[in-house]
Image (spheres, rainbow, N blue to C red):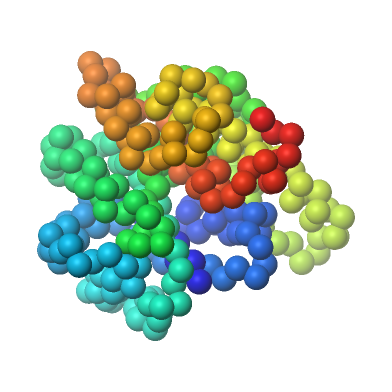
Length: 275
C-alpha cells in the first residue's frame, strides 16, 4: 500500500484521482490522507513530538504512528486502522506558502529545510514534495504547451492573492482539462477521448515542470541528465539562492505533481517520443 499525505482536502485529492487513473497500474493500492493544515503547522507538531531529535525513527511505520498521533488530536482517525507493515511507500505533498508570516521568512525556510532532510526517502520516513508557492501553481500557465512557463515567478508580496492570480492568469478556467470526472451517461468512446486529452495535457505539464526544475537547479531549460539532478532538496536550495533570498524576494512557480510522476515512473515508457 502507498500512502499519500496531502495538505488540503479539495484540490490535491482531485488531482491525484486523475493521476491514479492515468498512470498507476490497477493492481497498485493507494491510500489518501489529508492533513488539513500547512507544512509549518506540521513542523510544529513534529517538534513537539521530538521527531527531529530521535535518531531511532527511521522506518515508514514510525511516520504512520507520528501522523496518526497528530491527526487523532484533531479528531481525525483516518490512520487509526492502518497496519504500519502494509505501507511500502509514503509521499507527502505540501505548499511552500511563501506568504506565511507567523514566523520570519528565515525561520520558515530553516524549518522547511529540516523537513526536506527528514522526509527524503519514500521507503523510510517518507518523501516530501513542495508546491511553489502553492497547489494552484498547477494551473499557472497559458494554453498548453506554454513555452514561457520557465520564466514565471511570483513575488512574496503577491502570494496571499496567488489563488485568484493563478485563476485569472490561466488559459483554462477550470481543471477539467486534467481531471477525469466520471459521467455515467458518457460513451466509452468519449471517455477514452477525454482520457487521451488529459494524458496529453499531463505530458505537457510534466515536461514544463521538469524542464523548469532543471533550469532552477542547473540553468538548463531541458530534461536533466538524471533524476537526482532535480531532487526536492536541490530545487529548494536553488529557489532560496536564486529567487527567495534576493532583492526581488520571489519564487519560481513550480508544481509537485508533475515532478512526482517524473520521479516515480520511467517517462520514456509513459511517453516514448517526449524528449
